[in-house]
Image (tube, rainbow, N blue to C red; front, top):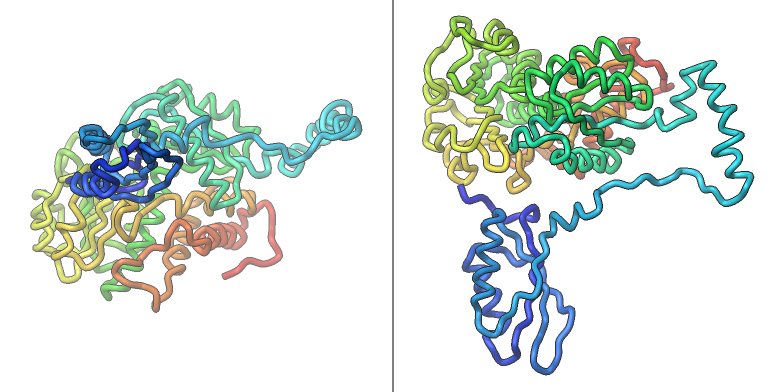
Length: 474
């Protein structure tokens, strides 16, 4: 699966081209023939003998970029002067800064922001700890915490290598939810040690976002911290993904005129994210769901299952189907993939029921190519931005935390997740809903607002809000 050229693999290549030589048209032809997409051409300078061009090229992957540069280097009368990876430039120096909210211009400012005036604020918080939410950063600050044990599809690359992801998460919190966030990476894999560290730093934060922590540790850590802390703890990889999947499923079912309770759903991959998706789909009314891990179908008769898989065996696969995933697809309404590329072939989808729904969410390459699957599928979604209907957890976590912080809830509950999924689905109206538009874009401000308002509504309705708004939007 070659993939599609995209900005995430893009280079800006500075070329010095001799006048009267092969010319810019040959350069652009070479890029196009190699499968690259020219995204922009700039002219930083020229003289009587040479012209200099900065050419931005979208590519499929790093190897594709190397191939294009080699081909350009081989052209006569063309000198490759510099190659810049635009993604690395985006990360240069890190992606976040600490920016003061108050200026220090005078001695008076200094005496109030720091000593001696700050002592009075400290005493006020000591006397009434709840005042920390209004008098410090705690009132709007999320800790984005990871041990680097399961970063994207890269696996256990460690905390330092996982830091760019945590920084990126902090940027998205602010951009889409107005929430301040700070990345913390922990050099430990033992759940007990991680729990101890998080509990020690928790007083300075309004919520904890767990990120890229491998199972089963992620379950242990989240469950314990939810019980032992009085601020929300949310493993985004599980729950935000599940909320977006359910929202997209609701709209796909409406589009195909199917009921959730009547869907037959086949799930490839029941790790942390897959398991959370299964649980939320079942809670929403799906009854016939068959999950698969590397050992085959999850059913009551299987041995060697994890605790989470055993729960799934008890609550899904009502007919105790034990065949292959390809066999399970016969008569299925929906395929949900949270595994690896290539687990099914496009032709395998031909046996599905009318108007098949396929969510192939593996990154960077989906379980089945959307282009190859097109003849067999009514509604297609992926985890990448190269195709319509991107299932992106950034649609959820900024709003979930914004709502939880505003209402000051102690926990993000299952009811809040369900309400958030329904609210996210409802962002797309009946008139807007189409095969290539079952989930809003991450850049649609309606999405983040809808999710935040859903959390606040549930918090106030169930009495969990520790800060009450006079009204919320329905």
